[in-house]
Image (cartoon, one colour):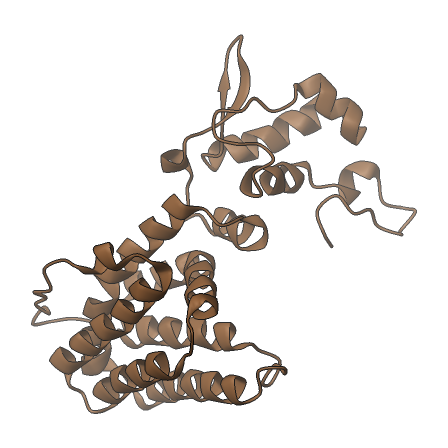
Length: 262
């Protein structure tokens, strides 16, 4: 149910119907409250939502714990700097996916993360991918192709962007490293924002799909160095579509550990 929408169940209280933390998170991520802004006072939030002060304080504390808000004695509650937001917190990632407006700095940070990490992970996947991992990667790739062939339809209920995110997520999983796999899960919403923007800004996707195919094939053929190079090629195209070519221009020497993955 959308934030702020009430239920039709007459047995529910107003407190149960409105998730105050969710409403405020939406306002922050959508830009209604910007970094440094002071949010309404507790008493005003109590009046707005018709709840007790303890309920408001509990909701505010949830956002404080997430790094979105800071409470300063005598100065009220303010929106924190972006660097303080706990972006790897699954709840924060979920809010970002649902409510975030395009944020140039955040997009650059996420893309820089991908440039630093994805080629290495692709190399690990080429070493450790199982038959089921390869099937997941190939299924996501096939979904991208089908979605492009039917641009006005959602192939099996998912869009091209959905399959693109699934493709990269499957490669993280194929590394068989628990940390990389978990990071891909918590960063999925942020990566989805980048994928959506890069795909929608591309003049045509044939070149991008060819690069994805090369990476998939290198992983399937267990060629780590080729997979690393192919991952960089995919990111080069993404950087071009995003107007972030400067991020991709960096040293590319990557050495895989002798013992990686599982």
